[in-house]
Each structure stands twice: as structure tokens, then as C-alpha cells.
Image 1 (cartoon, one colour):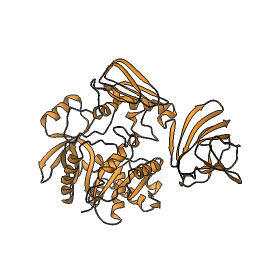
Image 2 (cartoon, helix red, strand yellow; image 1 turned 60 degrees about the vertical axis):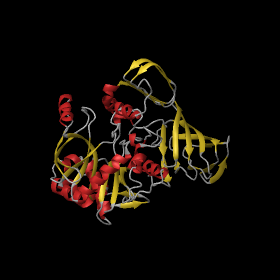
Image 3 (spheres, helix red, strand yellow; image 1 turned 30 degrees about the vertical axis):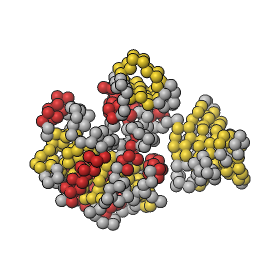
Image 4 (cartoon, helix red, strand yellow; image 1 turned 90 degrees about the vertical axis):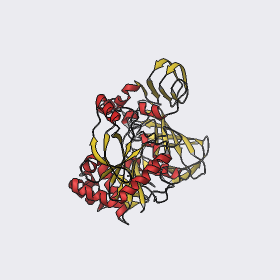
Length: 468
């Protein structure tokens, strides 16, 4: 039977702040190797004999980043379904199931996009057993063999044996430390991985049986789908009206068809800096070091430098993460509480929770270099063949200086080229566009001046990427 990967790309990864931000979350970051967590997830099933192109479910803000990351690893998705608003995993999986049933029933392999699975062979072996159970109409989850009494995960209690796994006797919430120790000692409990395998039709049937309100809302949202290139948009209001619920609560805890495949493959959901340290390569002092870092008498720590030299002396069991605009220091044991810092940033409406200084766009990226009361300086990099929108600003003027490549500039009625070390001035209110018709990246320095310099001072008149 055909299998279809459904990759869930939602989530903000708040526990990995300041590296993970709302507009560039952890699944898009290369945390354990040179590829992002999303890319590694998509590659996990690329060569499976029965796997078709993956369906991805992500939010509107991340659509171009997700599409570009798949292009980089030469994977063509069946589609990328865009959620107008996050509604947790039960509705997201239902969108994938409805998309599959447009053609025919298939076995869905539901994978969060932010997991690390070092042992690919063990994963594929467990997957084949899960597919066997799914073809017998079970709704299958992967139960990870626990390696410690972890209080940050939910657990699954295994029941009677099946031909390729076990029935699920119970799903249990995150336990306290004593209960977690009892679970691990018994040998009957497994970590709940959040990965699932089932037929599309069976999932939708069980969703309707147990949460008819969610099933009805997703049916309504799917009645008004629209397509733009690889993207699929669902009905915004109907999806917004859908209850927010996880697949565990909505379906798995209530169904009598739940089964589990035991699974040992070094799995981690990278739910904290401590979890990232655990799966990362370490030196002789059990330190995981990334970037320009100098240490002296440091042990059992995760230290990451993104932009500057970081020097650390005489510490143990700490996390130190440096980015261009924020630094985090926490003990390993308290790293789960980083999300409380993000809550404070949200309450005070600070931009550091949302974006980095380097902000990615479908045409390339810009990075803020300096800013003051009435000025801002950016480095703008435009990919070959790409262009910014045709736009104007009501409050700011801009100076552009080309430092690499050749710019094609539209300025009101004029279109002209700028070579390296040449510049131009964009007055307030002028209609303008920056494009790169060359074969190498175009890099410019933009100096903005004016009474208001916010990113929302853009009136787009035309855009190649469908942005309003």
C-alpha cells in the first residue's frame, strides 16, 4: 500500500530561544549537523520503496522558508498546506488525510519536523512494523524505549502483544520524578514520541467518532481550498473556528484501535537546550562547543557562539548561547524554563521573541546592522534571479550602495543598473524595486532615514511571491 509522509512544521520552539524565534523556529535550524531538523525529517523517508512526495503542514509565515529548504535537498513535496492559525496536531493531521483521499486511501506516516533520530536503520525497521499494523486498521504510535526517568515526556503503557507490536493499554501524562522512575523500572512504559502511522480513512473515521466538532470544522475548511504553485490554502474562517487539540487527546486516548511499536534509535524531540546537549558531539570534558568559543576549566556544558568570541571560565553544567541581539545563560537543569523568558518578551512586546537581526525572505535576507532615532542600516542580500516587491514607503527614504553583484533598480519610471561601488537614492513616496538578474548574489547596504522605520511601512504594488 502506498505511504505518504505528513510532516508537521508548526511550533515555535520557545525552549530553544534565543536561537529559535517565532518567525524562524527550531525546525528550520541546523542544530545537530549541516542540515535543518526539517530537512533531516524529510530525508528520513526519501528512499523508502513505497513513499510518495511528502505533504507538509506549516503556517503561512513559514511557507517560503519551508519550500526553500526542501528545494535545497532536492525533495518535491506533494503540497505544502498552509494553516491560517495554529490549531495543534489533530486538525493538522486531518488536513493531510483529506489531501491524500483526493486521490486514494494511503498509509500516512506522521512526523513532527523537529525530531532527531540518529539510527536510521532502527527507525525504518520500526516503521515497517508500524505499516503492517496500520494495514490491519490499527492507529499506530512509536513508543521510545526510555533511557532515564524523564519527567518532560508523556508515556505509553504497552498492553497485549500483536503480530508487529503491542496494543496500547494507556496514555499517561508527564509524571513526577518518582512516578517516572517506577515507569522505567517496570519495563511496561515507553516515551510518547508523537509520531504516528495509520490509514488516512481510519484516522478521519476515528476523529469523527471521538471529536466530531473537529472533523466537521476541517471538512468545512477543506471545501474552499485554493492552490498557488506548491501551496494549498484552506478556508480561513472555518479553520480558525476549529477547536485546538492534540491528536493524543482528540483520537489516540479514546480509540480502541491504538497500537504501539517499541523503538530504540537515540530519539530526541530537542525540547530544551539540555536535550540538545545530550544528542550533540562532546569533547573530553563533556562540553558541546559550537562557534568561536574559548574555555578554561569548563565541564558538562553547552556553549554556542553565533557572532562573537565567547570565553567561559570555571563553570559546570551550564548553557551559554550567544546571538547577534541576545545572550542566554542557564543551568542545564533549568533549561526547560527558557519558555518563561519568551513569555516575558511577549508581554513586553520585544522583537527578540519574533525575529533575529537576520530576517529571511523568499528573495533572500536582510540583516540589521545599526539603528537610531531616525536611521537604520541594513545589509540586503538578493538571490540570483530574485527581486523584492514593487513598493513605496510613506515615511522613509533609502540610500542603496552595491557592494557585490549587479542591481537592476526600478525608480518610478526609470529602470537602470548599478554595479559594485555605485549607489542611488530612493525618495520618500517613490515607487521602487530591487532585482538581481545576475548569477551570483546581489549584496547592498541600505541606509534608511525618516520619521518612522518600521517594517510595516511598505505599500506593495506588485509582488512575485503573492504577499499583500
